[in-house]
Structures are given as structure tokens and as C-alpha cells.
Image (cartoon, rainbow, N blue to C red; front, side, top):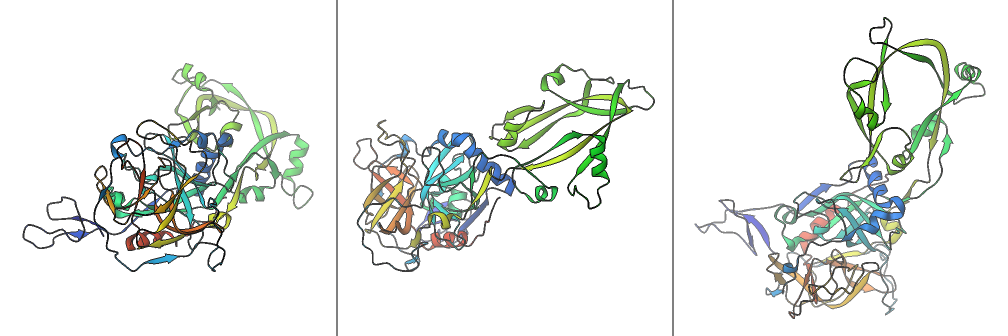
Length: 504
């Protein structure tokens, strides 16, 4: 069990037991195991993130590229480090759907229903993806993946932006919904020191959402107020008689009539005795051409307002405001105003406010584990056990050759290495390796112990972290995973008891 310790003087040490000062006395303090980071901070934020990826028939999902954390120099030869001492007894948590044992012994190789891709935006604004799996948890809402698929080590900017999990992903489709990350749990040593011996993460996700078209439905004001999705309100001009009927309602025929009267206004000069200053929204071009000063049609102080909207609101907007998708992928409308001086006239117009909701635009898809199940979890298991590894490889080999497209999941099968291994490129000391030629894009994919082909369930005993070239032919032939020990279980348990809930 490696520890990152800080001795007197501040230098960071990695050691199998203890950091000792020059006097021979231990002077280091051990860092805590768990790092916890918020992702989507509100329901509206989570809805906007889901909408970002689902918009235009999954255009952003299709545009994403495989994670490319590993450079050509990182694909190096693994070094044997001489084995590992478990920090606690071996343990496991059963998968969702396998709380009761089965005698089935099917030998078919079936892809697990739990696997999929995690999508995110890194510090550079690039859309990327890794592999991942649903895993057992109290509220059936947990995803297991690699730490570098959650935490941006290259930019040192905490969690990735707009992070979602899409189980069963295929060519822009999200058959089980899109699950927005709520809270990420990583090992403290990975987040703070970027220690790739702790390159794993568990993310509690909100209920999934399914996003589609649909049509607006006219509803009552009470229904409109309660609805927590896409909704609009618009004023419709009515007659004075209709207005009076609304105004005089006291339990009659029009129980939900929201009417108002508005006097017409004539433009006057700024020196007019009974003037009132009003703001009129104009286009960006009109605002740019306008002058400043105290006259009609001049620029108003603080006359620009930036509004953040959903993609559907962005598309439906017909006003004069300037529409823009910012560098973070947010949909914005900038409103511009000019000032005028007016006087009210005796002419009056009447309006009724109508309320609309779009229930079909975004729907709750339920909990992740209820929809696709969840793999079990195991830790402190001996090496040289057979595992099945799943992922979506897409990156080219170091020689430029590319076997995979990232479109469909692939798998590897075999025994993990007897001795734990390290990599000089990432200062790794305690990884488990497997002979496998999958490339980037597969990182974060689960290593499943005791996998049942009939139930498509097993126990997550690792996640793909590195890609390596053992025979020096400039091709990936081995992959590796952090060893899952008692500290991994501590992080997992913290994440496995977090409630998330619905976002719609």
C-alpha cells in the first residue's frame, strides 16, 4: 500500500511504508483518502447539461473524441515492482440483480448492459469521452470510471465540465437516457498529487433524462407554476369585453384568466412636462449605430443584459436580442436597449397572458441501476485471476495504426499479472496489468471479476488506466489498472451512499 506523505520541508514522497526524516524519526502526516467534488450544482444546471449533449439529435455526443490523456511517450514499458500487500481482508459487494445466486453457467460472451461512455468538456473546451460502467449502490445511481476521466489533471481544474454518463451509447443515441453527474468521489492522492496509482473515480449521478421534441401544451397558471421543465408565457391581445370578463371574474366561467390593460404611449421630448422614460429593446446593430446622450433613441445606461437559456428557448427565440453559444457551450441571448421619453394617451389595449409547458421536451428516465443494473464491487483480491475488460477503444496505436472506431464496445479476457507493475512515465508503482490491445477511449472501462455471461454481471475489480507496449513494436499490447484495495473501498463506500434524485 503506497502512501503520499509530506515530510518536514514540504517535499512530496511516495513510499510503501513511511517517510523518515534525517533524524530517523517519522515526521510525515498521511493525507485523507476521499476527495469529494460537486458537478451539476442545481436542477436547472443539470437540465442545461443534458440538453447540451442531447441537442440536435446528439450532435455534441457525436462530435466528442476519445480521451487523449496519454501521449506517445506515456505508452511505455511496464516494470515489475515485486507484488503488493493487501491492507485489509478481501471483500465484495454483489451486483444489482444478483443479490440471489444463480446456477446458470452460460459460456456466451455477452456485453454487459451496464457499460457506456462518459462525456465531458475539458479545460481546452474539447468534447471528450471515456468508458465507464454502472455499479451497485444504495440509491442505484453510481458510475465507476478512471480518475482522469473525471478530474482534469492536465489543467488542474478539478472535475471536468458538463460530465454525463450514457449507458448503451451508440452513434449519438442514448437508449437508457442521459445521466448528469452530481458528485464525484476520487482518492485524495489522485486529486491533489495526481497519483495514478489511485486513477479511479466513482460518480453519483442524477436520475436519467430523455430529451425529445414534443409540442407546447396550454395549461393553467397553477400547473405552469408547478412545472419544472421548459415553459413559456405570452401575451395575447383581447377585446375590452374579454378583459372586463376576466377582471370581473369571481368564481364564474373563466377561472384562470390573467388579463391586463396597457395605455398607449406617444414619444415626446426629454423636456416634456409629464414625460416618462422607458427602455425599448432593439437589435445589436441598432444599438451599435445609436449614440449616447439625452435624446430619444440614445443608448441607455447599463443597456445590455445577458440571459442564459435552454437550447429549446434559444431556438424558439424570435426577438431582436443577439444569440450566441459561448465558449463553454452555454446558450445566451444578449438584450440591447435604447431610451425614449413618452407620454401616456387615453388609448388602451388589453391583453391576456397564456401559459404553455412542454412535457415531452425533457422526461425523467428513472434511476440508472433500475434501468441497466449495476456491477458488483471487489477489493483486495489476489492477482492471476481471470477478468473480462470492456470499453470503447478508438485511439490509434503509437505507430499510427488504428483498429477501432469507438462506435461499439470491445472486450479483452485473461488473467491479471502475478506481480504488480509500474510505469516510469506516470510514476506508477502499483498497477495490475492484462494482455490486451485496446487503445484510448477504453480508459475507464471496467475490469470484471467472476463475470456471468448469462446475467452480464460481475464485480468491478479495476478500471483501465494506462496503455503500454511490452514487446517494443510501437503497438499497445498491455493495459493496466490501479490495484483496488481497502482505500479504494473507502472511496467507493462514500460514493455508494449518496442520494441524487430527479432533475425534472
